[in-house]
Length: 154
Image (tube, rainbow, N blue to C red; front, side, top):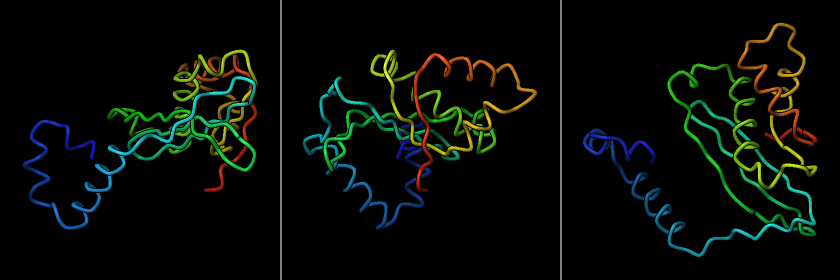
C-alpha cells in the first residue's frame, strides 16, 4: 500500500490490481475508520517493545502487560532507503531496534524496559571484533538505555 503513494504508482498498480487487492484495501479502510485500540501509557509499569525488520523496512510496537492482556501504546514503522535495503538481515534487525528505541526515547529513557527481537542481532552488535563506525554508533546509542532483550518467537 505504501507504494501507492509514489508518483506514477497508480498506473503501474492498475495493471496488476485484482480481487485480493480489493479485499486488502477494504480491510485497510475498515481498520483506519474504526476506533483505535491504543492505550495510554502507565508509567508505573514496564514497557515492552516488539521489533522486527523486513527486506524493505522496520516495524515495532510499544506495549505494556496488564494482567493477561497486552496493552498497545504505540506503533512505529519506517521504510528503509535503497542503501539500507542492502544491509544484511542481522544489520537490518539491529537498525530496527535502534530506530524503535530512539523513536520512543521519551517513554524509555531512564527506566528499564524489555526489547523483544531477533536476539542474535543485538548479540552480533555487541560481540563483533572489528565494527564499522555505523555499528559503533548504534552500540553507543543503545548503551545509554537500560533494557533486557528476549528472543522473538518467529
